[in-house]
Image (cartoon, rainbow, N blue to C red; front, side, top):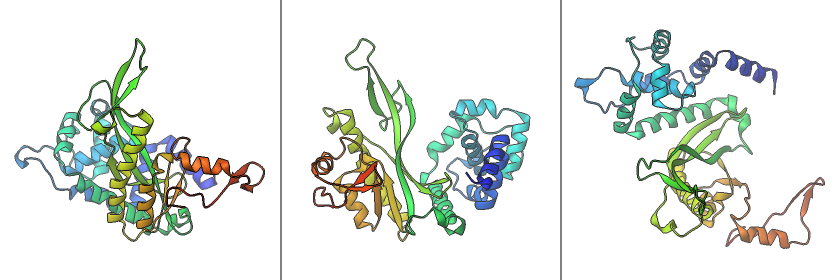
Length: 305
């Protein structure tokens, strides 16, 4: 870690909100003005809080690492917090910040494409900053693909929730439901990531008799197909290297990368591509780097190399 990175880390530990504000103002100073231009889906006759305040409150909920709306309502019910956040927003101060229930109702009506446009603009802004050019690999931007679990519990809250069985066949067997998405994040170096697209991981009745590992791989692979379409549409000319785990090792995924002109680095995971493993283990000799690392190029996978 360089001296500059160490200095930033210490500042974040001492006062994370102040340091995050400084970073936001430096790299994306128009954030709150972008919030104010989001189309308001609510009935204008019953509005207490502006769109800027609604979205700004959620922004600081995430910055503060607050996991639930209920916890946000409790922690933001403080005179000093209210005063500070309205100052940060640059909005007219009120006695309170929006309640978690109010935020949930707002989000249910909000068109997600409004926020996706801001998300895209943030990514383009970061790319234009020459500061991050060193993060590129072979002059291409690394996009990390990974599944993220947003929520888990015993209640299936909507049809998008997936199920997971624990302690199958035992007396304490139970089923939990979870909401998962596939995230695409632009890597900017120094552990800095910028989310550029999100796609829901879905499951259908065709998976009922299949193993959980097979279901997980197939669900994520299908989510990647939809996610790749979003990435290509938003960043059609961006030179890209896709980085993903072994669950994305399918011929369909690799073909999409090639069709889009993307390079890819996919970590091998045991059981995800058995033909590759068999071909590799059958080789009598392999290339080596040093004494501990071995590799081999040009191993066939279906009709791909």
